[in-house]
Image 1: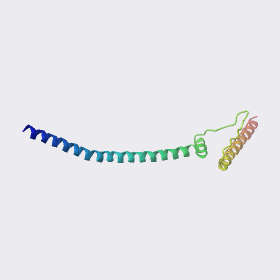
Image 2: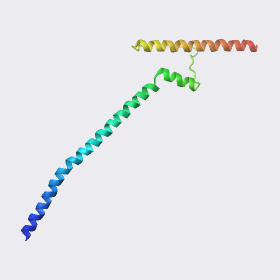
Image 3: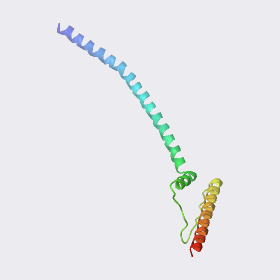
Image 4: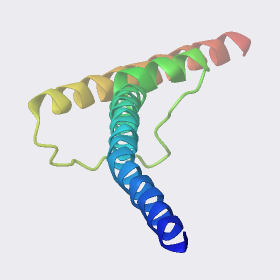
Length: 121
């Protein structure tokens, strides 16, 4: 009787061990699939965030935001312009256009402010 009970307990234990060995890889594969899905979603989110950062940091967008918020950049009393080797002709052209535009804006503002001062006198 004891021997039959021992065999029965051993058989049940081995059966449960076999079932566990069959179920565990399936559970792990589901977990791997879920983690891969999360990883791909995070990579996509990261790609979108990098794209948004590039857009937000672009000179054109920064200039648009400055205009929208009425922020002006002015040259100081002793302006100092440092030329950087950017390497891209397009960036150099953009920087030249921005410098020219702000120089013209500053020049026109100073011209009109002098006219207003002259009219007040």
